[in-house]
Length: 373
Image 1 (cartoon, helix red, strand yellow):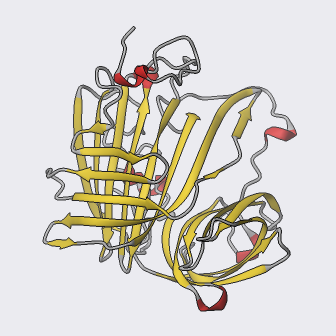
Image 2 (image 1 turned 135 degrees about the horizontal axis):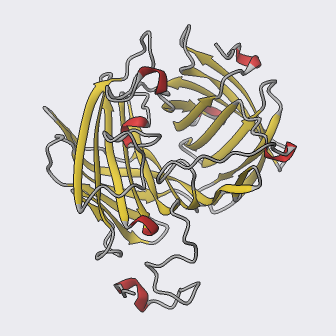
């Protein structure tokens, strides 16, 4: 077994070096998602370790003027387990839980950046997610989410901008995720009622309302009944309010599942309901380009060993059309279309800011008139 610099710290949880996980599951992974946004800009970067397939992979993506550009990078994880870099993409923890620096060096995609993310409030530790099929645990993961601001420089072909305190978010998740690694089919003769996935809509929303920040997520069934909900609002003086529910009224681009605005009311444990109005900031973004859900050129997703060093990139339209947008190498019938939407927000008392709306419709969702078709 190999030692890395991180092994000098007294934080081991099992009697192995850090680069050897307690589980041998090939789908075990640990990594980050960052994004920042402004009018007609959506920037995302991710980096993730897959120790049981000896891989670290990542992506950098910029959506602007209806075009999404994406760089994907993968390398052998060892040696260099404690070096959070793959290709030109690097993540540096400047001050744990408070500041991170993201860099993308010059590369063939034309995307380059140097951004520092600064936390607005403590991270929100989401509830542990476990999902079973035929008695097999296929997802078992933990994530925390944090509202931030981002500043620095960003370059795409023909244009350089200097974000200054752009609204931003980040998350860090780890565990077993069935959508990563080599495909595995889980099957059997029957599934229990508790294994059924009744989710018809997903809303995952970190936000910065100007004079406060927060996070909530919820899933609802096809009839709009809440399956789960969690969230919190944080204020600059260090106080916070737990959230107990959301009532949402989203508006959609006609004929599409693309939200363009609307409102929601967040219900607090303090008995106060806070109202927020939303309107699109442009630049909706889809995640196949990040490599998710078989988005790599080899037709697989993250967590597959591709060699000592691999780079690839894509550029494509994210405008609405007859088929969902996505990289050309992903078959149209497999594309999800955009799921990440930056929104301008007006909150209680006229406070202003932005929200990151991760939005999925899974087939039929009656309250907004979506069917299986």
